[in-house]
Amino acid sequence: MKTKVFNSVLICFSLILLVSCSEPKKEPVWHEVYTKQGLKVVETDNTNILVHLRYSTSENFLGKDVYGNLEEAYLQPEALSKLYKASELLSKTHPELKLLIWDAARPRRIQQVLWDKVDIPLPERSQYVANPESGSIHNYGCAIDLTLADSSGNPLDMGTDYDDFSETAHIDNEVELISKGVLTDRQVQNRAILRSAMTEAGFIPIRSEWWHFDAFSRDETKSRFKIVE
Ligand SMILES: [Zn+2]
Image (tube, rainbow, N blue to C red; front, side, top):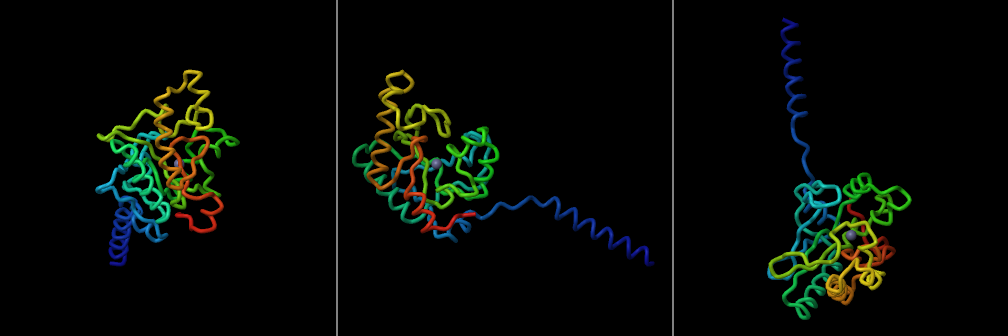
């Protein structure tokens, strides 16, 4: 009798173990993760803003989806106001164009994945991917990666794709890159249209990535906002 009871308990325990092991790992509810920190979703209805998060697809330098079910762009409200201002400015100067967002807020846990997987040796790595220890401005919801698209949503030619880690993506030597035949006038003009709308709206560009803009300096970001883990 005792053995029978013991066997039943053992079977039950094994079943529980089997069920709990086979249950797929649940993804975080991103909306909760972000809104808890005061971030807001970028609205695309009735705007010239499109969202296509590249880390939620395999079209990124890792060649795999690291965002899972996260499909929407989130930002700190003040950064979002600046984005809407840039969208307004663009609609006045270039009503045929749209802002196409590739990335906005990015949790630190994903920053760690990018940091671990990027194939750039350590001394130079932080020039291209922020060290998760100190955090990227994206991790605070204060940075945005974006390009311009035509009225059908096709990205304009900017000379490089997203996450191009070469000098061709830099913004401080574009004239030289034209003279060397690396970039065309058209590509540099397209970058200038994007940069002009974004900087007029209060964003700060960075030297090494034509698609990246910060809403605030690193110091201001860190002193005013909390990192999204
Ligand atoms: Zn960026």
